[in-house]
Image (cartoon, rainbow, N blue to C red):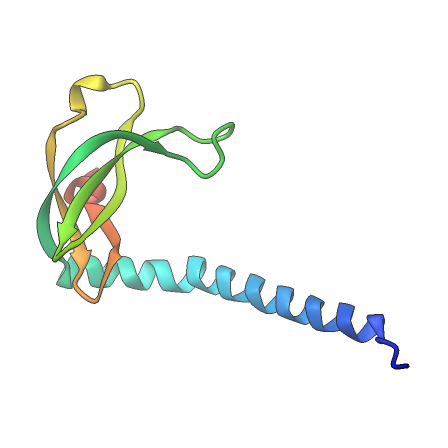
Length: 115
């Protein structure tokens, strides 16, 4: 009968977890700023509609904002409209959005860069 060495399994799981954490950190610190620069310079502009759907990663500590939706081909994508939940007049409003043609999931409303 063969026994499993749980210490090596734990070590492998730890290495995988550490690798995932490094990748998430690198994406947030390096990837997002690079993608934002590319988006601002080379983004494709389209029109989106603000929906009543909201998004927030940590609802207790962040402001919920309405999402917008737009289509590229036969797929629908969404993004954070930066319009805070509760401003019902904005639902259904059309906004301009920039997206990367090779990565439409990465998108921002054009007013993202406004001061």
